Structure formats: structure tokens, C-alpha cells
Image (cartoon, rainbow, N blue to C red; front, side, top):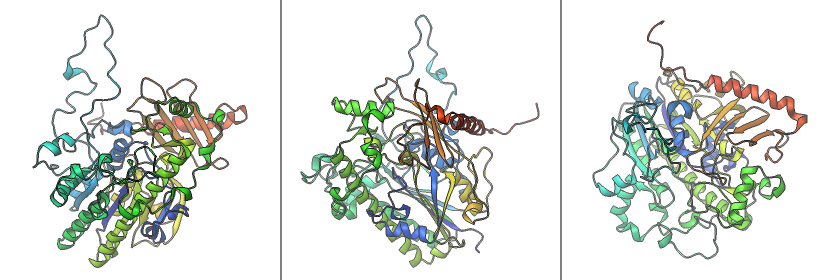
Length: 533
């Protein structure tokens, strides 16, 4: 076995675990990703650290929970002095690259949706330099690498490398056919005036679709962001093949995140009439959890935030259309994955390249009548795919229901590269589990939520903490009376909230003990002490 394997980490944006054929979905066509599961290990109980983009992507890079690395929610960049597992790979001689979406920094200049708390009457406000608990966090600069404004105003703007450990970056920002960054700069070169090509105002007419944020893009398949990510990833692999260093490539697709804009043949690949919505879509209104009911009431009153990035209640036809178009975006990504696997084989690199696949979080996609994401930790949001295909491990077609999560990916990659993690990394190596040497690495998974936008009819974002065990999920919110307890074995659709059921008081108490222990274990062990006292 070569001492230093290559790594290709493929991620998607906002893809729930059951939106792949290898996870039991009989309607979607994903043969190339499925083939990774056939020759690798599939994780059936793999959970995010939190259900939003920036925070979980920062956990992916650091192996730490959001409350520790500081990117608790969207809008807080990952501190440039954070150590990432890619830093360690680069230090060990790896050629490191990122192609596609990064989102470790803000993409827009929009102000936070939650204003600072007002200064109490009669008190003097602290000066700006002392307004936060940690001073000088942003003082070193370098936090405008992904800003849309910088890319549009400065033709020479590029991500300064090394960028969180990456030697090479081809960047995508934003979503759908409106992706910016290096992609938009390339698209202008090949397509001219892209303001006349993409976006809903330039969409091809198709009166069959009425779902919010769904439109038929004019961007051709070969110029769509997912195709470009594949092209740039192939170019990186070819460059790596000419060198003498092992490589780590993060190939990060911006789809199937909304808006729903699969191009060309992928728009019509799936018929909404053939889509089957989750059983919970048809849940009785009187049994809806309070925040879910609030979203349904908002939509009924014409106040649903159907054009935003937070969840909203969907009508049946809307949900089926969104599902069909999401499948189209995923199938396009699958075709690109097939190209990448073929390129690895053509370059003779497939025999020494570990390929992993995951997503940054899921999407309700009809669960409980909702679309998109929010501070509701249903399985559709917090459970994502994870596949590990290693040419030097005999795991063909193996699957595990052991609990694991996003924060375990860094420790697993480092262990496979024979590198120790840095002090303070919370994730655990899954190699022993992958090899079948033990049954699991943890008894519970902790999921955090520190919302960045008010929702559910409230005037401030919601905070929540969740623990998932082999049998149950417990979620506690910061709102009085909001709590959930589900028996996942007997109620996988999470329809019956047992939290107030006296018959399950013992289980509730046990789950609270699990949560308390997981919260304690999630406390920071960094920095390492300088001395004894």
C-alpha cells in the first residue's frame, strides 16, 4: 500500500440522505454515486453538526462543533486563524485543492437579520472595538474572499491562497444558475452578457411549473455550474497527475440547493406527477409541532417566506415540482461524478485515491408539508449521505447503521493519511468502523442550532440542541413549551411527539441525561495549557 493515498471529497449542497438510489430511493437515477457505495462503505446514520451551510461546512473543515469554531450560523466567517484538517494535509506534503462552493466566509453584504440587542436606557454603549466578547477577531482582514461585491467590482479578484489550507481554489458562490466567483468570470468569457442569459427574468417559458424559486434556465448544460465544477475538478486531477505530490481535492457542488434550476434535459428528467411525497406531508394539522403549525399558518395567511432561504409550507403540487427538479439537479451531479471517476481511471489514479461523498445538510422537501430548511431537526434535514470508497479496504457494498457525523470526516481522512489530529478536534476516526473492526465510535450524536434569521412568527432566531441515539431523537428549543421526543425505530417519519407523554417519562429522562453528557463532551479542550498553574 502506498504510504500516502490521494483523497477526492465530493460534497453537495442541501441533499438529504434518501435522495440517492443507494439509500433506497427507487425513483432517482444516481448510478455513479451508487457505484461508490457498491465498492465502499455506506453510512446510514450520518448526521450534520448543524443544519445550515456555513456552520456545518466549518465543522467539516475543523472537526469541531459550531459552538467551538465560532461559525455558529450563516453570516459568521470561520476565523482565519482556525486550524483545519486541510492545513495538516498541506503541511504533510499534500497538494490541496477546492473546486466549487466553499462558504467559509460571507457571500453577501446583507446585514444580519437579527439586530444587536439595544443598549439599556441610561447606559453608555461600549466602543465598537470592545463591543464583542473577543476583540480583534476580524482585524487581520482577508474576510472578503467570497463577497459577491468584490468579484463583480474587481476583475482581478481571486481567493488568496493558502485559503484555510487549500493551495488551489476555483470558487463558486451563490446557487442555481446565478452562481458567481470564478465560475461567473469564466461564463462571461464563453457566453458574453450573462445578465441576458441567467436568472428568472431570462428563464425559458414553462407554464407547467408554479413552485416558488423554480424556473427553467437558459444556461446550457455544458455551461451550468455543476458542469463547470466537474471541468475544473478534472483539470485539477490532470495537474496533480503530472506532479509528484499526493493530492486532496474537495469537489463541492452548489446544487441541489434552491433555486430549482436544472438545465437542459435535467429539467424534464423527472415528472412531478410521478413524485411520491414523504408520509409526513399529509400529517393531520392538529398534530403538527407548534413551529411547523406556525409556518403553515403563515402560508395560509399569505405571509409565507416563499422567496427566501428559510423554510415555508408548500402546497402538494409545489412540493412535487420541487422534488422532481431536485432529482434532476442530483442526476446531473451524478453524471459529473461519473466523469470524475472515468478521469481517475484514465490517469491511473483510481488505485490510490480514496473517494468520499457527503452533503452539508438536508432539505425538508415535503416533510411535514415544508420545503427548504430551518431550526427543525427532522431526519430529512440533519441526516445526510456519507460514502467512503477506499481501493485498499475490503468494504464492497457494506453498510453500517452506526452513529457518525460530519465532524468525524477530518479525523478519518487524517488517520487514513497516517496523520494525527490537532489538539481540540472533536471528531473521531471512522477507519476502525469502516474496516469492520468495531461496531461504532459513539453512542449519540449532538446537533446544534443557533439560528441566524427570525422564523416561526417569532421576532428573533431560534436556538436548539438535539441528541440522536440508536433509537430516539430529543430536541430542546429555547422557546417555552417547545420540545420533541421521537421513537425513531417505531416512528421513522417523526409523526408522534412523545415528549409530554407520561408513558415515556423514563425514556425522556434518559435522553436528557444523554444530552447533558454530550453537551459536556462538546466543551472545548483547546487551547492546551501552557503550564500547571
